[in-house]
Length: 410
Image 1 (cartoon, rainbow, N blue to C red):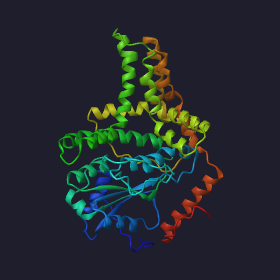
Image 2 (image 1 turned 120 degrees about the vertical axis):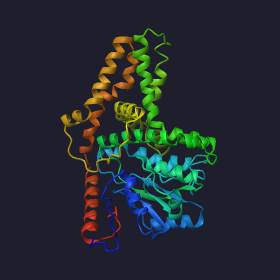
Image 3 (image 1 turned 30 degrees about the horizontal axis):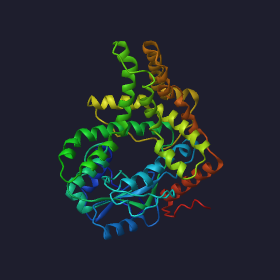
Image 4 (image 1 turned 90 degrees about the horizontal axis):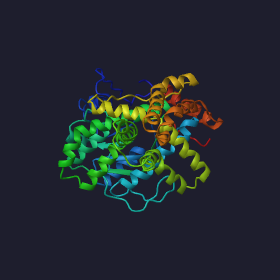
């Protein structure tokens, strides 16, 4: 590390247990010559004076873990630009609302005023987070799990440590670079959260330090992805299995309700806040359709991940791709052929067995959603400039030790 003499690089020679193993490799075996440490992802940019601002929060508040805010601002292609709003709503809006004291601000970066907050269990989300040494040593280690952030949060909470969300301190990370990267992340979240549920549900339920409302909120948060899988499994049961077994059901019109719930649940919150932020209704409608087609094509991988997790298949920590290669039409089909075949088979089976044409609303995205793979090939001139600028700063930092702040305005 000639370019960075003050940076110590520590490698895990055994390379076990993914992110948790890497963190414990140093934190449990190091010299303990620190009072606080920050957990980052490899592609994260921090705002100026990030550490200083975090330390002030620890000084003035009785906390063991501080989760900072996050925006997806390093987006440099059409796919990232279109769908990054989902992350930019979740972090600065939902986390402020869920935090027991509303962060420390009542206004988000997007300008949406947040009213009453409170009651939910604040958790750390794996990056852009600072933890005190005392809190870590009390926990003993980062739990060896794919959802190591959720597990760490519960271990700290059960030990009596406070976790807070700092709405005014930001990290900046790129949204998944293409559809494949987003799908890998979604699959990982699904299996990891079910692994977390198996390991911690009993301790959470029995806990005296976590309120009933916080327990319900925590389970709803962690089981959101598997619940979507069960929603669509229920559609298959009602439109294929029950008719095949001659089990009488309610009218087909009634079955439109769960179908529409599944259909709109993916991006409803995003749309509400985009509308409040002044997005024109036509653009909002286009975004809704795009989001429904994209996330609707994830049903196969979500169901697959859920079923494998329920069969006790170990969750895997898969690093999402960070660089987009040019994707052709044939590559897009090859990357998504399982989901396409699953959707086509489901539609044919539903129509043949029960005559349920309404199921097209749910499974037809799986037939066409793969087209979003190629959206990542497109960049505006501004996005190309942004990508080139970031690469230039990265090269300077790695090769010459340059610590200059990225200026996006010049």
